[in-house]
Image 1 (spheres, rainbow, N blue to C red):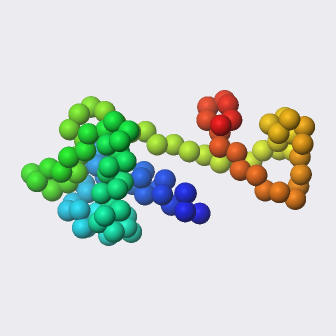
Image 2 (cartoon, one colour):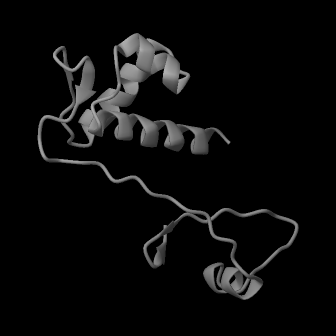
Length: 108
């Protein structure tokens, strides 16, 4: 499950940045199991959503210089047949596996 692996990498990256324990970019990329270029893509994604990420030579780590923090959470929930029927407007087929991404109380 590539999606889950990406979320897990992002969670680990975020945790290490918050704790200022990333070490050098090459070491961090190895720890995450990605190339250095992919690491910088993850960091650019963090910047794209509004986080400031910088590398501190003093701490030899990436860090968040502002008070902004990222909270990442996701979960899977097994839906019973009656809930699936409600979500799908009355249609339920056991022959198809469906994934629903839940956000708060609503379904996206």
